[in-house]
Each structure stands twice: as structure tokens, then as C-alpha cells.
Image 1: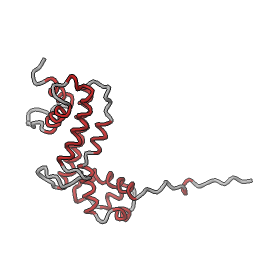
Image 2: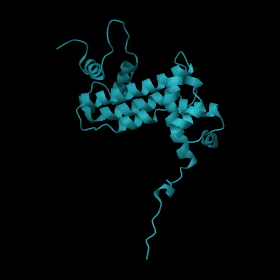
Image 3: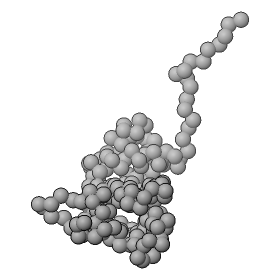
Image 4: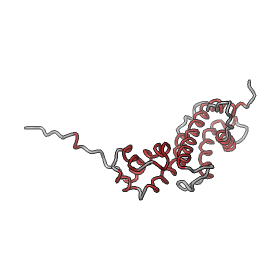
Length: 199
């Protein structure tokens, strides 16, 4: 009796749902848009995703819809909030805030790269992002930072929500000078928690 052997090349990965395919295409497209701006072609995106160009147009009506979806994803606070929620609350407060600063700076960098490459100058928000505009997005992110402060509520001079707003403001309004490098996340947290006076 001969044993039948299945040809591994004939095995196929489970098909993606249209929503999974949309997500995969968006994640592939975002770094390409950051690099090439609106000049990026759907053919280039398809090659990077390992799919045929026609597959893009099965889940997006046209290139404009894909670009809008990528901008919405880059501006969405969801990724930053997931990163903040994953921070270990048993760590000391300075370590928690350093991780928060790193996550939020990465979020800001991602937004800046996409908006800059597409020419959305002047900090202009292109509209609602998954039901959240700029103000709503900021509120959601500040709420996640406040959760990181909650274990130390008794030691804080003000409520966690207010401290989170101050931290958020410092993080996103660092003054830029030509002769001084940006503060590292740890330096920023040190100044935030201990003030500007050494010692």
C-alpha cells in the first residue's frame, strides 16, 4: 500500500477576509507613503505587500480611498493607546513615564511622517479619525496616561488627569533650539518629575 504524500506547494494559507486584507495593505502602504508621499503607486504598494495590484482595488475603490485610510490609521490614537495600556504598572513611576514618552513620540513621528509627505502643513487635522477628531484623540491618549499615574495618586500634587495633561503638554511642546539636542525621554521625565533645578 503506497502512502499518498501531499505536495507542500499545493497547500494554501487561509484566505484573508476583506477587512484583514485592508489592514495588511494599509500597514504596508504607510511606510511607503511616508517615504514617497502621494507619488507612491499602487503597483509599488502591491509589490511590497506581495499581492497583485488588482487585489488592492477589491478592498479600496481607488488610490484616494487607500490614501485616506492610511492617513486615518496614522492619526488614529488606537496604536498609541495599546502601547500605553501594555506598560507594566508595577514599575516605578519614572520608568512608566519614560515608556509612555517613547510610545507617544513614536506616535507623533508616525503622524508627522505621513502628514508631511502628503503636504498637510500647519498641523492641519484632515478630519474625523474613526469617530475621533483631534480633541477627542488627545482626550483618549491623556486618559491612558492618567491610568499610568493612578497607582501613585496619593503621592501626586494634583489628580492624575491633570498631571497627565501637563505631561502631554510638555512632551508635545518641547522647544527646539539649534545648539541644544532634544531631551531624551528619560531626561524629559526627570525634568517633569523633579523640576528644572539640579539636585
